[in-house]
Length: 464
Image 1 (cartoon, one colour):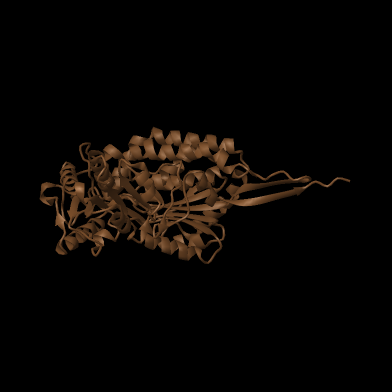
Image 2: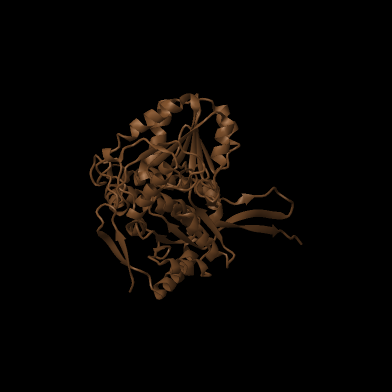
């Protein structure tokens, strides 16, 4: 049987080996999912909520060990890794659990004599979630928990880089009392992923990953009349106005660009700063970036771990070198980061100026610890530059004027618009993107809509 290997970015060793699913296992998994969903959909919502509430508690009880696994699998410093469970995962799951009764309630229609009319949210059936490595629990929870709450069964295919995360989901849901077959996992090749998407037993696909991966998912689904939720890449911009609280903006934007070694679809990838505060912003942002400690993510002092693999780090190095060759200025000396080692996943953070939109550093997703910064003379120039992208996931403005933030936000092509914060998902708000950042909507009460289908009940009372 073919083996899937996970290479740790920490030290390059083989961390996990798992057998890839055989055709027979794939078929039996799909059959169990269909059968289990029939009884799960009939389970009262309150019971589903109770099971999933216990599931969250189980996951929280293992947050420290899960954090260590995350560090080994994808390189995030252990000082932060456990917070993926304690904060974002738990917050999102609990919000969706609490929101389910409202979101899944029948839609009442105005009374009409002799008729009972309403719209019911029916589960779609079997949901196939394809989850990424960069935030392995946060991305997966966006579809897994609401799908189960809505009465669907779920099959999770996690990234080959983070297979232990899929297994954590499975074990915790079993411990919480989820019936057998309602949630299952598969380790699959790309070809087998396409096969599963094309199987008539799959009713919806939730994918988080690259634009090219999203195109492959969409192509595989296009032969069938099913929907897909695609949360893809980003080149998320930030605009710092002259009236911004500069200390707050610098602290949060440097973190938004560097956290998780910049490996976030909604991380800050380009910054536009009003000329009135540009020089001070650059100087202080570079100074803050120099305080990061690059090293082994299993050591408590480390604030910047390795990128997920050497090829990812080399891609960022190439983008930086190309931009410098085109006239950009690098403000961070990699030699001041002893952990930076070309030919490995360990990469120093970088601040670039002298950049422009003729450089791919400002137009192509980087997914690394890098912040290119451009000066702008006006709101209008900032708006034009922020919109000059094939992506549209999030964008942020830093200002003391809420009215200006709303006015500018109305003109930005993006799924989420922030003021004075970035790189965060509020579970009460719809998580969605435009352009090449994807399609569909996760989280909030609207997030249940893609995991259900409306069924209209039109009941007429006939009297003799």
